[in-house]
Picture 1 (tube, rainbow, N blue to C red):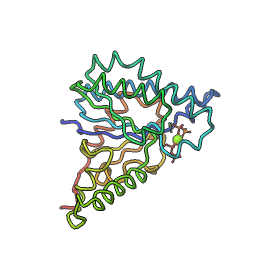
Picture 2: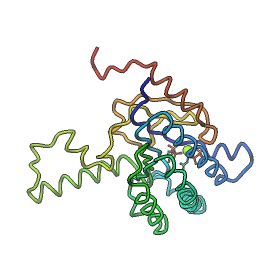
Picture 3: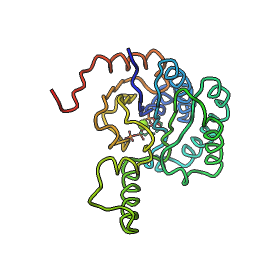
Picture 4: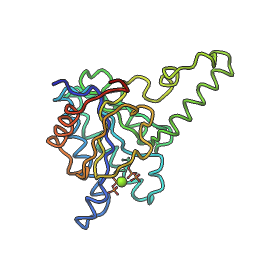
Length: 232
Ligand code: IPE
Ligand code: IPE
Ligand code: MG
């Protein structure tokens, strides 16, 4: 069966995974990075064209400085370590969110990895970093208003497509499948617009315990759904 073109994942539960083992939260994030590797590889194997991973929300800045700083160090390390695998597997890296607010060194490493993988033909891995749907929609609204004020956009012609084209995700199709690990039944400000017709798959598994077999299970559940899009 054909895989979904685009899967979006709220990678949740790293902290609980660590807590269960009496480890510091950052250990959970480290193990979470291993799940990122496994899931990306499996998406390549399944022919999934786009994989969007919620890695850091605009609300996550509220966490202790030590955890936040540790996450950026971990991301930089991950990008460096994974580049050869991404090249070998044909993974193209992209990022969405207010990237310009990240630490300089993280921005540099991201830009470097995005450039190095730009021509890779298999799965596009999109990291949502300093992302929230409401800031994305506010940024899009500001872009539309600016164009209207400049006289380059007639407000009467604005359609859903006009707005979609100003989102960070303008180049990508909407996800058909949204997975959230660790059982929470909420979107936490993730892709509110883009997930309008996505199928949701919530699993109690914590993100560090979510591997290739779990992804295949989620995709199988997706195939068993009847998608109606408002019709009969
Ligand atoms: C998800 O795991 C990773 C990030 C939000 C960066 P959490 O860190 O939210 O893990 P829990 O929810 O505390 O278990
Ligand atoms: C959502 O997880 C954000 C990411 C996975 C990056 P959170 O752990 O931040 O969400 P809440 O606080 O449970 O809503
Ligand atoms: Mg969480």
